[in-house]
Length: 71
Image (tube, rainbow, N blue to C red; front, side):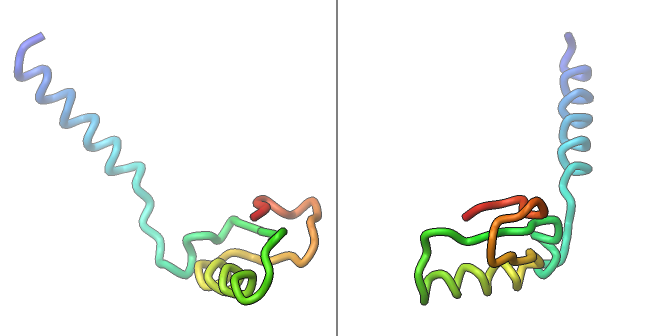
């Protein structure tokens, strides 16, 4: 393989990597996350909850079929 072919391949790989990057605003980073907290006590529990909510996650007080993450 020539250097030109290698350069083209590297450029294509970089383009694919850049296309995969999804830019979202901070408050929408966790839009698809529904989480439950277990084993944490306040004040850490409230801090984790508030940070995740600020990033767009949804909180459930108890595990259910909608939950995607258990912390």
